[in-house]
Image (cartoon, rainbow, N blue to C red; front, side, top):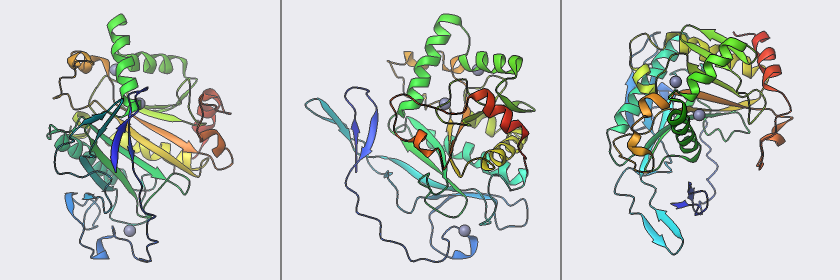
Length: 328
Ligand SMILES: [Zn+2]
Ligand SMILES: [Zn+2]
Ligand SMILES: [Zn+2]
């Protein structure tokens, strides 16, 4: 495996010829507490419900990124390449095999979110890493890897493309208007209420104005905050977010077979990126949020590769339908 930079879009991809994974005949789950498999445990959250623990981070059993060494960036004519140096962990969301983010207790979800914050903060201490991604693939068409309720965390020596687009655009909006583009959007959505799904305490779930897939939903803090981990590590600050995440995923699961979920937070700003203006305004121009991209079985075609995204359901209709959906 190696990292290659697209010379046109300047985005990095991980690329290589991977042998077909041997069909694992294991009938037991490696992440259940009783599995007894020797996992490399990175962090564990205390129990809140009598289970042995509530959430934990373990090294991914087949990591795409290796923790040792330097990226050793090199060029070959037009092309740039580097070694896939990084961290790749599995975030086990719950000790119980059947407790998902849409049917667990809010306290358990809070512990999981605090663990996400803790791992992001910790991995940012490694100055080789420029970005820490947290994401989850759920459902047979999503690329889901494990049956147990899990998410993944990946620390990379580059900022992923989509985040980079957002960072550039947010900085530009701030340069012109001296306001955060996300705060501007949140304010308009709260006034218009057309695409709002639910407000809970400090957080809002809403369908973006220009969705990439039907029922795309974002959850963001209503007050400005650039760093997810800073919110997540503040005692009690995640309670409403946990409930809103649970209720939103429950709604979406009544409509979609699966989903991708990705957290967008500020990059590791110890890297004084010149092209990003040395992050001078990032505290004010970027705003963390969680993006949920549902995968609709029958309409999965709309999710496959497209030059221009097409959603056969408008954001306003999507939000109206989601608002009426059960939340537990
Ligand atoms: Zn399990
Ligand atoms: Zn903001
Ligand atoms: Zn985003």
